[in-house]
Length: 79
Image (cartoon, rainbow, N blue to C red; front, side, top):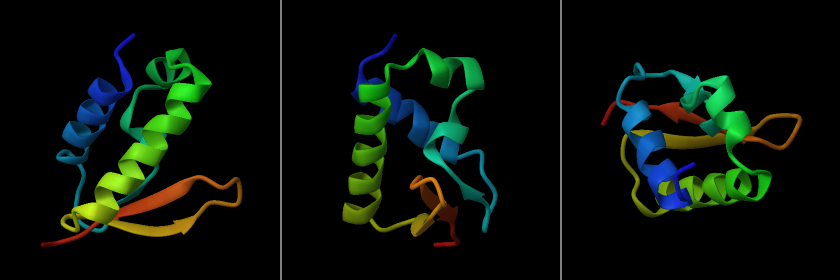
């Protein structure tokens, strides 16, 4: 499995395929079996790194509310 920085790059590349206004979770940027193969500690770190990156570089991804299970939701927006 890739290291967390490589996973972050993969996640960012997947966001390029999303449409304007589309709402997503980081885990949805990976196929189910790929996500399940990532150790839990790395998934948590990946989520934190993705959130920090989005907050530090405002652009096409907007942070929105969390799900009832505490997962951060994002929305693609027009720049």
